[in-house]
Length: 287
Image (tube, rainbow, N blue to C red; front, top):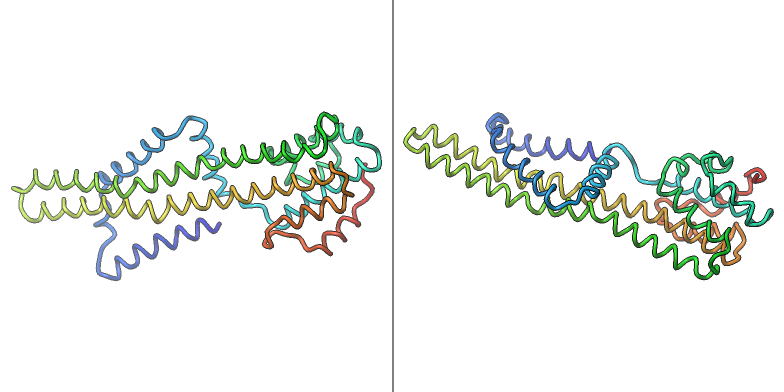
């Protein structure tokens, strides 16, 4: 929602200031300049991005517009889920976790927390982290290194859309100059048609420069920053999972493992210690 509000503010401020100075918005409407600027920018995007990164960019942009970053409620649900999982492992043995992590969609525990169950990356990270614990294939002190490596790979992959969007944003002012030069070439070709025609074509050329800078600094680069903030939120969610599972694998009590994970969170999304403990104690017996 905020991204839409911000876009409206950018448009309203730019057009409003232009109109207050006596300008008409119709003067800025030169379709040829839009075709050059947006077309070349789209070409840069396609040239610079492998197919899977293009899909990732579309997904990330859509997520920025329609979705939201994980909030305190999402993290509270995560910690409650992990606590229930850990309590089963403590009471019934680690083998009792197998039915939950091998088929989480059918797990009575996971079904209570749709913010995790319906998010493929979060669900997969939890299950991948718990499987070695259940199988006993690695030592507890080795599990954290394994999860850190997976987390670093995911962070590197998530940065690709940010890098490409910044590339496009940084290219747009230059693309605007290209559009302006093309407009000046047209102007020189029409110089014999009189001052009125020349003035119209010069205005169109200058609109190209304006459009390139406007789209770059008003939309594309801010959008790249929003994608980066969302990536950091996702990374924090996965890091919270890693801290809790690694602590439990090393022998920490379920409540302590969850508390370690809680303390790793930013204050904006961190549940209160007393509130979380009360919520955990209020959970029914894990099954």
